[in-house]
Length: 279
Ligand code: NDP
Image (tube, rainbow, N blue to C red; front, side, top):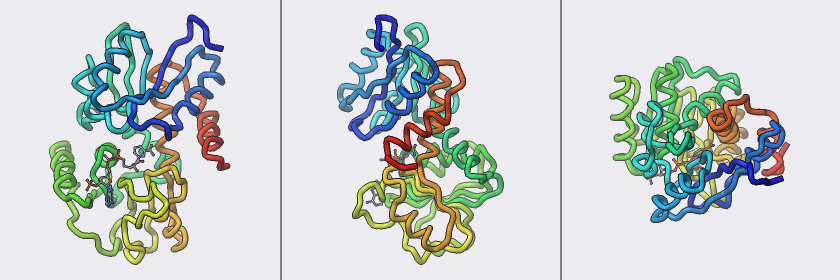
């Protein structure tokens, strides 16, 4: 029940109608007995400044930030967590007494999802397809978690080069730009961080012939849960991971930042699965 004391949280995005975060967080608040309510806010890029003013004016306790605002919100905040500052993207904001604090839980959420699948990133050789915000957070978290090498391939190579330069400033000699894709014989983990696969008739982000035995294939996309890439990788007998785990764990970490209490992880997982009508 919403009362005069209910604390409001939400997500700012454009579009925002596809988001599963309201389902995941509202279930978690209910299960934890918290008088919180999480709402979707469709915020056009030119209204972001007004929306951030609204967070302060309406005393909204916190928000998630999604495409296309993750980078542009940074100068509008009062404090930035070190990791969010290095990644250059914020996906979680906490309103502490009128001051807005920005965090990035995508990076840690990704690593948590990998470990949950029994995969330890240490010494792994990784190929990332794509060079947007998600690729940057994922590459950064892999670098901090001791991978042996990171190659980034992107349709627009300059964007891959920018991420590689950034990674080399954090720790040199691990990351490089790939200008072409060849058979992934020497790669342990392939990560699709492009948006190819979101739509039903999208081509695969990599030719099936380049997948090699033993490769782990992680697609950051969670809807559909089985993208064309994951279907093809499964067909070749490879281990596959969808973006659902990353979605769950970034949400778990955001919940902890807002509430200070231990999140009900399994309730949140079930809420996502139910929303996608999968077991
Ligand atoms: P961005 O828009 O920042 O980046 C999109 C990337 O996809 C760019 O590298 C872009 O290449 C590439 N791309 C788009 N269309 C094509 C195409 N037709 N052919 C080749 N490459 C293409 O998005 P994000 O980084 O925020 O998100 C990337 C993916 O990760 C999305 O699918 C998103 O759903 C998923 N994601 C999942 C999360 C989770 O919790 N599981 C969290 C965040 C994201 P170019 O630079 O050349 O334009």
